[in-house]
Image 1 (spheres, protein in one colour):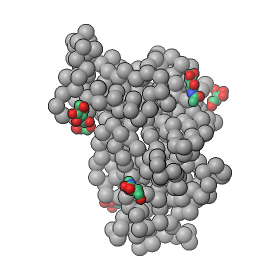
Image 2 (tube, protein in one colour; image 1 turned 135 degrees about the horizontal axis):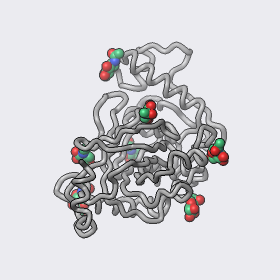
Image 3 (cartoon, rainbow, N blue to C red; image 1 turned 120 degrees about the vertical axis):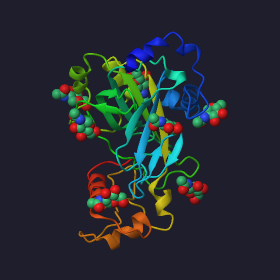
Image 4 (cartoon, helix red, strand yellow; image 1 turned 90 degrees about the vertical axis):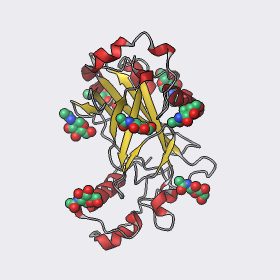
Length: 288
Ligand SMILES: *[C@@H]1O[C@H](CO)[C@@H](O)[C@H](O)[C@H]1NC(C)=O
Ligand SMILES: *[C@@H]1O[C@H](CO)[C@@H](O)[C@H](O)[C@H]1NC(C)=O
Ligand SMILES: *[C@@H]1O[C@H](CO)[C@@H](O)[C@H](O)[C@H]1NC(C)=O
Ligand SMILES: *[C@@H]1O[C@H](CO)[C@@H](O)[C@H](O)[C@H]1NC(C)=O
Ligand SMILES: *[C@@H]1O[C@H](CO)[C@@H](O)[C@H](O)[C@H]1NC(C)=O
Ligand SMILES: *[C@@H]1O[C@H](CO)[C@@H](O)[C@H](O)[C@H]1NC(C)=O
Ligand SMILES: *[C@@H]1O[C@H](CO)[C@@H](O)[C@H](O)[C@H]1NC(C)=O
């Protein structure tokens, strides 16, 4: 049904890409990709014909955060896997993004924006997404090629440009994707030094049809840690990561974790499991 609606205005979309009164327009996101240098750092061209929302739930406050392109978020806000929405609007009603989709989230600024020798860091890659005709919610019908890894920018970046870019790209999925893609991204693939443009060429994704991005500051500067130890500290980005989690002693209780993470709010069992999972994930992985 969505594709039927979308196809009606297919001819019109290129001439009315200007946005409407609310939210972000195609022009806004296109301009944002340009001014933030995502073009050309991540992709050579970006001419979206649909909008994609990234919807996070803050791990501490449980508040919803809808990403406006370029929005600065904290590590707490981005700790949990987000929902993605393909947003229909009058400006994108002619979108070609109306079938099965591939989603990729990459960080070109690893290990530091000043010296991104490990970029791109692949935070998520999955195919077989389709949009709910009513809500636009994107749901996958197959397992991700690379599971979501939450943004973990290391502390100590240059103060002049300390925020890391996290770039979501949406592609139309070619028929052979599910058979082709595992040759390039599979269980043995490193997240470091990924190249989404090269991957797109390898599996014939074409250009992205939608995108969005957000920024995350280093742990030492995130909102919940101004007077508290950061969730995790990377002592030297260029060597094997050394983690200094706030939880010490092996058996944390709500009273030992609440100070660092929620400024006095008691954590319940679900939240403690989330924190433990995050600490375990950080201790076995490179950060960024
Ligand atoms: C989109 O761009 C227009 C024109 O520059 C601006 O007025 C508007 O505030 C922008 N919207 C968003 C959500 O950034
Ligand atoms: C998408 O995000 C914008 C903010 O950029 C928000 O105004 C809008 O309600 C969101 N739409 C959906 C369907 O989530
Ligand atoms: C969709 O992806 C999620 C994780 O992102 C995974 O847990 C789930 O199993 C996937 N769905 C299917 C049908 O494979
Ligand atoms: C898995 O991916 C790597 C690239 O990360 C590739 O070199 C390797 O051939 C792939 N393995 C298989 C079995 O396709
Ligand atoms: C990524 O791959 C594209 C296409 O092969 C290439 O033009 C570009 O230089 C590569 N980027 C990096 C950072 O290696
Ligand atoms: C990070 O710290 C700098 C200076 O200490 C401050 O100007 C900036 O607003 C902080 N950013 C965040 C996201 O807290
Ligand atoms: C933990 O707290 C969150 C938000 O405060 C809530 O959504 C969740 O249901 C709670 N879980 C348990 C097991 O109490």
